[in-house]
Image (cartoon, rainbow over all chains, first blue to last red; front, side, top):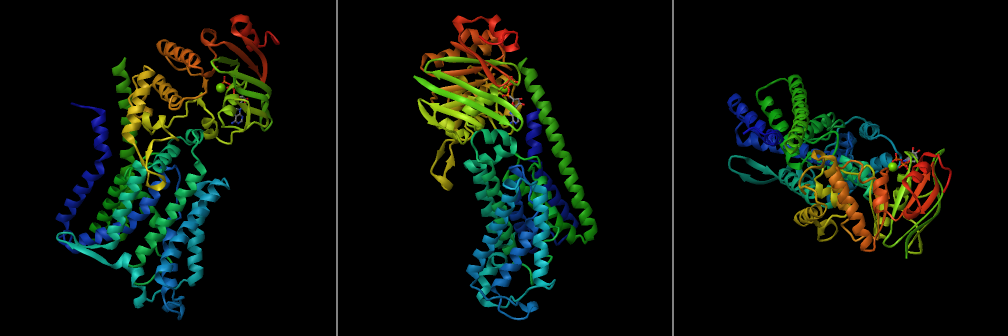
Length: 345
Length: 246
Ligand SMILES: Nc1ncnc2c1ncn2[C@@H]1O[C@H](COP(=O)(O)OP(=O)(O)OP(=O)(O)O)[C@@H](O)[C@H]1O
Ligand SMILES: [Mg+2]
C-alpha cells in the first residue's frame, strides 16, 4: 500500500542505502578497496571529520552556524604540539616541553574559550552568527600563520609526548575484516553515543531542538536561549580542539594550513546526514551516515585515482543531490499533512 | 482574597505607549474578561503578568505580596499559567514535548538526568483526553490542525495546579464544539477556586462565563464592571470609542 509516511521513512534512512550502494560500487572498481588497510583508513579519516560534524550538528540544531571549527582544529593541533615539543629552532619544535597531560587540558580549554567568545559575541554582542564565525575563521587562521611565520611545527620523536599522540596514532585492537581499529575511531564512536543520548534523552538536547524550531517560543517558556547558544558554541569549540588533537597524531608535522577548507566537508557531512540548516532537525545517527558516506567516497575515488579536482566536483554534486532529496522531503511532508487532514474530513 | 493586583502598570516600546497606568485585580474563583480593539494592549498586559515583559512602571502584587517577575519561570512559580495568543509551539517537536517544554519530567540530576519519555507521553495523553481533543502525544505539532494546536497550548496550563490562568484569545481558531469545551473549562476553574483572565473578541464567550469585564482602549483601562451591570451593547461602545467611559 502506498503511504506518504512510508516514503518519508525511506527518505529519512536513504543515507544508509546509498552508503551500501557506494560501497559495493567501489568494491567492483578497485581491488584495494575491500582490504583491511583501506577500511581501517576510511574509519580513521571518518573519526576526525566525525568529531567536527558532531559539534556542528549541535550548533545547527540550535539554529546556528559555526564556520570557525576548521581553524580551531588547526590551532589546537599546532598549540598542542608546540606545548609538548622540546625547545629548539622553530622548524624543529621550538616548543616549551610541557607535560603532555597539561597540554591536552590547555588545548581543550582553548577550544572552549574560543567557542565561548564566539557565543558571547553572538548573544551579548547581538551579532550575526555567520559574520562572527567567519571572522573567527580568518582571525584564528591568521594567528596560526603569524605564530609560525608560515613554517610547520614538528618534533615527534619525543617519547614523553606519546600520550598526546595516543589518541590519533594508537591502534586499539584488530578486527578481522576491518583491520586495525584506531583509538580515534573508538573515541569518535563514544562521542557519537554520548551526543545521541544528550540530544534524544536529555533536557539540554530537547531545549536545543526547541530553540532551533521556534526560538521565540523557547524563550517564552523560560528557556535561557542565549545561555544555551553560548554552551553550544563552547561544545563546538571543545570538539574542534579534540579533533585537532586527534589529527595531530596522524600527521608528521603541523602545517599552518592544517584543516583549511575542511569546513565545507563538515557542512556537507551534516547536511547529507539530514541535519537541517534551518535548525531544529537532525539526529546523530544521520550525521554519522553522512560522515561515513563522505569518507568512503573520498577514499574510493582516491583508490580509483580520480584527480582531486574531480573529487571536489563530485563532493559538490553530492551536496546538491542531498539538498534536492531534502527539499522533496519537505514537499512530501506537506502532501502527507494534506492527506491526513483530508482523511479526517 | 485577591490573587493578583496590578497598580499603575505602564509599558512603552520605544515611542509606543502600549499601556498607561493600568490598575487591575482579580480574586479567587473569579473570571475576568479583558476586551479591547486590536493593539489596545491586552496581550502586552498578559505578557507582563506572565513574566515575558517587565513593566516600564508600576507594581505587581501576588496574594498581597509585592513581586516582580524577571522571567516566565518566576511567574509560573507564583502559580500563574498562560496560553499565549500565538500559542508558542515548536513545530518540529511532538505534542508531548511541547506540553512539557521547559519543565520536562526527568530521572536523575543535572548532567546525569534523563528524560522520562513514557511518563510525559502518558500524562500528555491524559491531559488531551480531559480536553476532549484527539491529539496524540507523539504527533508532530507541524502536522496538526489549529484546534489541536490550541489543545497542546491549553494542556500546558494543566501541568501544575495554578492560582491564575491567563487565556489570550484561546477560542480564536477552534470549532464551536471546542469553544464550548474551553468555556466549560473556565467555569470549572472558577468553581475550584482558581482565577481566570480571558482575553477575547467574542462578546458571547465573555458574557457567558465571566463575572467581570474590563476594557482597554489605546493602553488605558476605560471600564471595569461586573457583567451583571453591563450589556454587550455598552461594552461594544466602549471598545469602539462610541462611549468614552463607564
Ligand atoms: N514586542 C513589541 N515591540 C514593540 N511593540 C510592541 C511589542 N508588543 C506589542 N507592541 C505594541 O504594543 C501595542 C499593543 O499590542 P498588543 O499586542 O498588546 O495588542 P492587543 O490588544 O493584544 O491586540 P490584538 O487584539 O490584535 O491581539 C501595539 O501597538 C503593538 O504594536
Ligand atoms: Mg493580543
